[in-house]
Image (cartoon, rainbow, N blue to C red; front, side):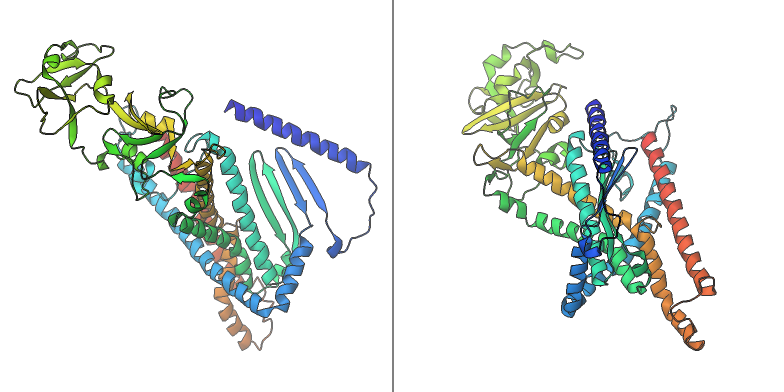
Length: 534
């Protein structure tokens, strides 16, 4: 975290220095004061506020105008795009009401959790430590918080995914505006502290002259682009399209196990397992599968779903076993270095002995015994019974197979070791590239969906506010036309906003906005309380 603060300080120091240099250079230039035609305009404007950089340009206005003129000359393409974005308008209205429904559901669920969860005497919630928020009530929101819910190292990928998502969003508004011949006034990007953004400015006068259906198409287009990209990424993920592209330089080892991508620098596993190794099994659970399931995470996070192993012990020589000490197996005995307690529950005379687990549990050619405890010859079946958990990690180093023994909570292995399914065919290909691309696509998909939902909240500063206004106008325009026709057609397009119908529109819009603010504030407050009590 301290490194991030140093980076922020250096970044903004450079930005302020460059802006000062730009201002000094521009002051020495003498520019003509006459108005440049729109077709020749390519103006840039830089605004720098406290920790907020805004870069705005008109360079793309002419390209946008040319595209709009091309659509006017090609009615078939224009009608196709109108149909495409008309479907997006329908999705926008559905998304707006779905967002309100999600807020209602979240508020209700959090209220139920807080009222139904008992407090202990010290004011803490009595709950299962392994229970998650999503398991506790099906709350449809998951906060992406670098350093809290996601690794801080993923912050650059997360910010890049956010900026790309916003560019697709704003591109949707620009294209939909061109379909209805609404000109751009500017495009731009901004940086607030460390959060990037993008925007397009559309002529408000031209927008106000559009019918409600046109305004609804433009207002919904950004969110429509987001949900479309989300659907495409999801479809490509199901078809494993990325794996097919990467197959040029990478080999799929999912049938054998999981390839090690990285290990935490302070992990005790360093040196015993190295990046590039293939982990084939955990205890007796094979990680290889043709189904491309995440068996690695399943083993650590859902241990109850792992089938029991038919082999439960190891065969050791009976006479040698009898000669070993049993001091560490006594009740209350202190932990002894280098040995652990093994029992022979299936022998005629049960023996508890202190044995070195490494030669017994790591030798791949060691004979195993089933739950019946049957061993051939003068051998006895022993099982590991020490309270300290041991995890056998099967590792393949090329043609060499070995077993690494981990002592400690198994979940720490999942936290310290990052694995994947693709192994480079040559050393020139980065081992972490497939995982980085998968992480990027995962964040991109999550942000695309988030922008679709959150931007359609019916609030005046979001797209949802315009969607709400256009929806109200569209739904009430038929009754307006009927009233105007009865009045002889007077004021068909310019109805007085102070009239009864105008007041009804304002009342509906205000009521929905206020209700959304109340739901949003209530659910956020309840979420913070739930997090604090948890």
